[in-house]
Length: 119
Image 1 (tube, rainbow, N blue to C red):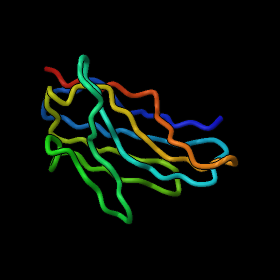
Image 2 (cartoon, rainbow, N blue to C red):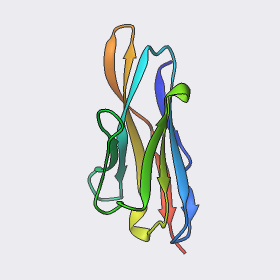
Image 3 (cartoon, rainbow, N blue to C red):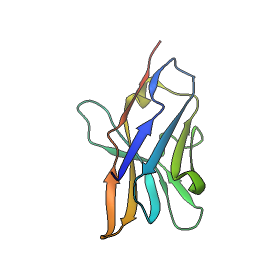
Image 4 (cartoon, rainbow, N blue to C red):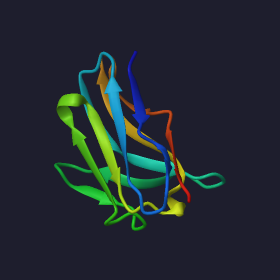
């Protein structure tokens, strides 16, 4: 079964840190990790961080300097290191990846992992 699964969410106090992981698995020929998104209750899904061509990255203004996106190609895994977390970072976090399988390349989303920042 081809899938993308996020993990690493949880409850953390303001100023704390979390590292999210996004792992692609299954009968995959190749993986292009696209980025991380988040959705807070009552709000639209928004971009958090994306991986662009080469090793370049782009971040939402609200997370610049606090979040870092990275990937480990050998493990088919993408990460989001989140530092100095704020209550407004509370949301469900989703990763997006383009996976190439036998029938072509498709966009996959994970099921989401909840991040709650509260004292």
